[in-house]
Length: 504
Figure 1 (cartoon, rainbow, N blue to C red):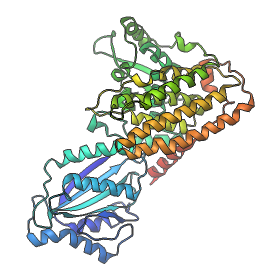
Figure 2: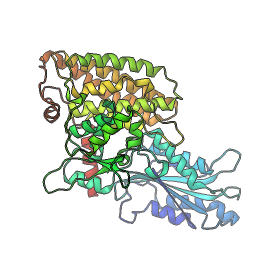
Figure 3: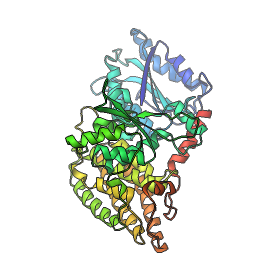
Figure 4: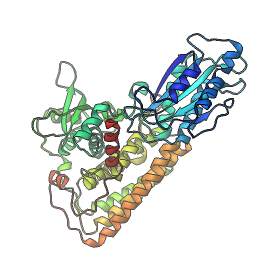
């Protein structure tokens, strides 16, 4: 969420602009969504010219009466905007956010007289961003001034809290951690190439799967290359003995240049130093990793080259059931454990999405993305821990490489049932912490979609699947035609929405 503040000397002029057509005729369906206690304006409908004028007069009233005239103007204008890829918020949700903003700055605060303010919403911006405007008077009804010292810092902190509470894109430059937003250029290229989703999202799932399924760094590099991603290391300046970062890209057609993303551009928990916190890091392992990073081709010589038995699916069910039991017992205040659980679960869903959904990302990809956002921590938070979900790494490996048998669909259904419990548990923890939108995303919509897939897997158990005999790479390409596919889901429709917002 981006907050932008300006000051001016005319509330009437600001409201005429907000209820007018805008600079590029982008203002449509202009309406008041909420206002301060001294305004008395009806919400949720278009206003007449006379009502807009009266609203401006109410905004100016205190300064007209007391002639306080603060420096830089007595009208405070705040715009709060979200990228087009974020969840579409309702008027009621935006109203809640507006109240948080004016209370944080002090336009309405216990023990002080209120100041007039109003929140206005209209259509998306020319770049597709949803947003609201708050117009407020810096003069209270008793003539005293609203203290806006350090308001930018206050708004920055408030926006970070809202991002976590609603499951929104975390602004990278503010917190130093998060899931960066998608650029306009990325969205335009995605629409032009008719992809189901931007490459950044696909690559993030590839990295999450490889990182959670791997015991060490060398295995991570091999798995990542084996998934089809292009991988290149970043060595320390002047040497080839220590890798300090990495970049990944999708394979493309002849004549095109791949677009590379560093781990931190995918998500802050996917930087190499953060990934290393979850791997075995002996001296021998570090040397093996450097060899793998430096290799021009992947030999897939580790355990990831060995196909698992069909019976491994049942072992995955037992393992995740054990992990969910431990997770439920974790105190909600233990952020390290909950962030770690979300990270590891995101890796399992990433593996499920790649294997079952292929190039049509659906509910499993949605779950991986939402859990990835849940895994993000703030600078003051402890680093994520995987103590509560030790079995998830083995589960991700089973999902990535185990063969199929006639009983596999039954195990998939049982596995999804336990993963649904994981989503519910993490969603409940968000709810207790007051992060209502993330709780709703994980605990309601995604759980319902996973339940639907559970039913599909149960129904497919009578079809008599045969064990797959493909290699790992061939199996990934074939995407196992016998497995009941999920529908393209939110990502595909979101890609279409992105294309429409770009055209506007």
